[in-house]
Image (cartoon, rainbow, N blue to C red; front, side, top):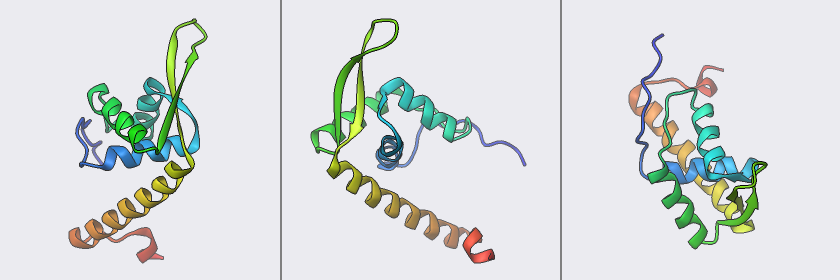
Length: 118
């Protein structure tokens, strides 16, 4: 099977869900967050700073994410993002919503899920 080409656009709202899911596992600074998401996508997705930081800022304004300044090992300052309690609830809801959308798309496209094959 051919590898999917790298994409730099994702459906509206999906980046928020991906950011919330990654931050549910660990506190991360922006660059590490982008690299982790790209790694999870196995090279099929490119996270652009012009998309990531506005999403983080929006989540911060909503109270789902909080940021604190830390020092990197090389002494540079960087912002580390973490989920708030409200953010954990938002992450669970976003995950459920996107999984439901994926199930619907599988059904519409005639793709059987692993649950249906079992």
